[in-house]
Amino acid sequence: MRVYNFSAGPSTMPVEVLETIQKELLDTDGAGYGHMEGSHRAKPYEAVNNDAQALLRELLNIPENYYILFLQGGATQQFEAIPLNLLGKNNKADYFDCGHWATRAATLAKPYADVNIVASSKEAKYTYVPSVENLPIRPDAAYLHVTSNNTIFGTRMTKYPKTNLNMIADMSSDILSRPINVADFAVIYAGAQKNMSCAGLTTVIVRKDLVDNDYTMPICPSIMKWKTHADANSLYNTPPTFAVYVLLRMLQWLKGKGGVEGIQIQNEAQAKRFYDYVDNSKMFSNPVNKADRSVMNLIFHAQTPELEAQFVAEAKEAKIVSIKGHKSVGGLRASFYNAVTDEMVDYLLNFMREFERKHLNECK
Ligand code: PMP
Image (cartoon, rainbow, N blue to C red; front, side):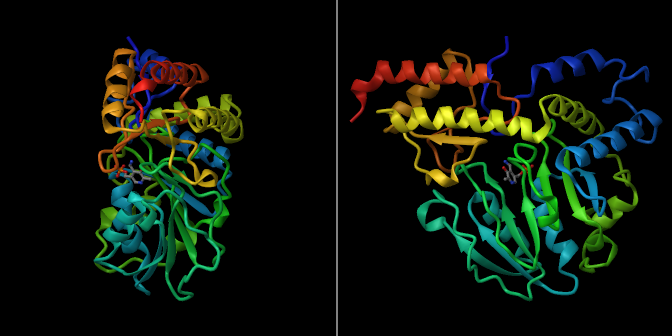
């Protein structure tokens, strides 16, 4: 029995993709085996590795002067890989702080970098994204780090700072959900377990000159060096082969949906329906500045912690799972990644309407 899964990650995947993978598990493309059990040095995986890169390049319009790396270690590993790969000649690093993961990226850079926070919405519990205008960016910093979508606080950046610095973006929770201009960024990275694939894969899209000219800190371990992986076409050591294969199937599915432009229409429409309901509800509310609301992670509150606990319990009965807010902030959260269907959104909204009708008299 499948449930209505609104997990923030790893998250629900398209049933069509899961069914394809299920069919191919024992024999993919005539190899006679599936990608859970194939050598990463054998031809079938070579095709998967190259095809997934090519299709990602096509769907995100990634120019030829960018490497695409398929790594392990999560976005969290990249929080340290970024300073280690870029601060060899200059240890100044600027960070734009709009949420938990942005803070984490800056904190983990501190042992290697002279970190400067150019803006933060911490004082308002990250309910908005700071303005990207007139930031005190140090003109001689090595890079500026931003986080495109804040998974925990339910905000997203719709504008990026105009800067001559190399801009690095953590796009873990909204990559492939909307078009981006890759050339605006020096590095884009994302854990795969939301919009790209299953867990285990981290994709790094990095401008070639940053890898080919050596900006790496001398203490950077080989395994953390982007150059190590770029030179080996992501086959330096065993890559997360199954997750890369799943990525390829997810990208093929996304292409069938009209690519990022096509899925963006679905994502925006679903989020609009959700926020319209919540804004008109007598029970539910959303604390985020309207212009900054995330289309991927939709947070909401139900007046009291007791009502929220009741909501989670009744949701479970109704086969709705992973609807609780992150443990650090509480409240409720529904993640509407690319794979979330209109039918799932209808089901959730109907459940919320019914819950509101039943429990409204318990509200203050
Ligand atoms: N950045 C963002 C925006 C995230 O949402 C997450 C995980 N939810 C991370 C980084 C950390 O990712 P990982 O657990 O793959 O290291």
